[in-house]
Amino acid sequence: MKLPLLATLCCAALSLASALPSQQASNVVLVTLDGLRWQEAFRGADEALLSEEAGGVEGVDALRDEFWRPSPAERRRAMMPFLWDTVVPAGQILGNVERGSRVRVTNGRYFSYPGYQELLAGFPDERIDSNDKVLNPNPNVLEWIAARPGFEGSVAAFTAWDVFPYILNEPRAGILVNSGNELLDDDTLTPRQQLLNDLMRTGLPEAAGVRTDELTFYAALEHLEKAHPRVLYIAFDRTDTNAHERRYDRYLRSARMADGYLRILWDKLQSMEQYAGTTTLVVTSDHGRGDPPDDWRSHGEDIAGAHLIWLAAMGPGTEPLGERVDAPTYTQAQAAATIAALLGLDYPAAVPQAAPAIDALLR
View 1 (cartoon, rainbow, N blue to C red):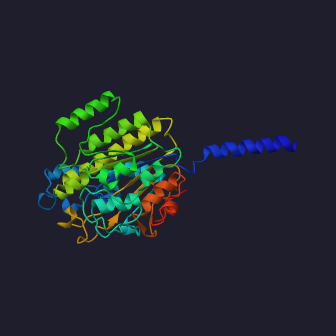
View 2 (cartoon, rainbow, N blue to C red):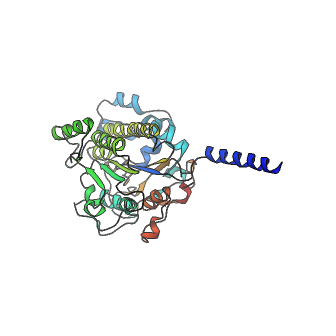
């Protein structure tokens, strides 16, 4: 009687194990929203900026109808419904300063190149002190992952800003980096890729050296469907551009648009056999911004609060704790090791200067 009972128990244990969430991801998608403040991520629209005088808003009443709600929880959901309805309940979000959670930038510069360098390399570098197109001397987690067995030729980055080939040191890294208005280059372009190239040839850029977020997103999505990368990085820019231009209306709408892209991306991932149930999504920013009336437009070492950012993740390998409160302070530098750890890889063991992974994020 013992052998049939043992067999039954073993089958039950296997069934239970198969029903439990995977403890490790097979794929990771990283998305960054340039300069999106933690204040909007957690509070939604800031009433102090819903005006022409403070926020450069055109059509104040219409904007209030879109984004203003009685409570911060309702406002943030109006701005980023996918983040708050899907990502946070299934994963975690860090960085709500008002609830005792902080994610801080440690590079001391608080602008884009130093921020992306810290985020992707896992440590700050005082030599990175401008946004100039200088090849980054430091390794980054994307190129390191691409050199691991099973990831060769399976890491790609699609970014709106044309400085990323330098941040990621594309010549050295040996990964696909498509940025700015760089045309898609493949032996056999799909009809959608050909259309995207036509739009890049004939359309207006978002700003000097910056491709529109929609072109960046759909170029990345087409690559996902065509090449099936295991690690994909998508870097949006429009939130930062609109803030610098003192257009709070466009800043809010750009955040909502990016949130919509996240939903499309997640739905696509769940519809594909390689990615469904095996992919973790990580969303964060490169730097914070200041406060109204004027500093919200800016960031940098002279802007109070520009060192504070936020980070969210969901998928296999992440602990589903929702919005973190009264949490330890984490750093932007920890993102690189966390991305690797989600895949079962130890980045700091190979790059000792890299900060450790955010253990509390990991299942």
